[in-house]
Amino acid sequence: QVQLVESGGGLVQPGGSLRLSCATSGIIFSIYAMGWYRQAPGKQRELVATITSGGSTNYVDSVKGRFTISRDNDKKTVNLQMNSLKPEDTAVYYCNAYWGRMNYWGQGTQVTVSS
Image 1: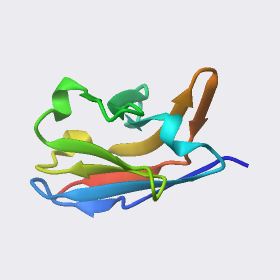
Image 2 (image 1 turned 180 degrees about the vertical axis):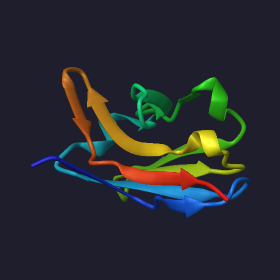
Image 3 (image 1 turned 180 degrees about the horizontal axis):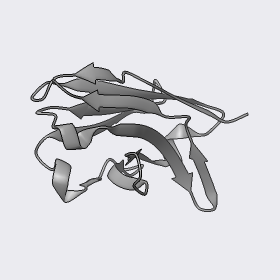
């Protein structure tokens, strides 16, 4: 059974930091591309960052220079370090794993940026 479990969300003030983690099981983690997506209330889910099996990364323009995605193939986890958070970063953040036709999602973790 494939499981992706996010953690690390919460309430943070503008300018603060959070580190999201996604623990996986049931997949050959090292071959999967991994990503973080987010969905704000009333908006469509959007891509935040991806990391390939080889470690290449990609970010949406709005988070470049502030967020960093990383993966640990030994621990089968993918992380998202979020710095200089803004209120517009408020959303539910989802972990994604994909390889070929295989595409899996976590349940999401809430991130709220507010003073």
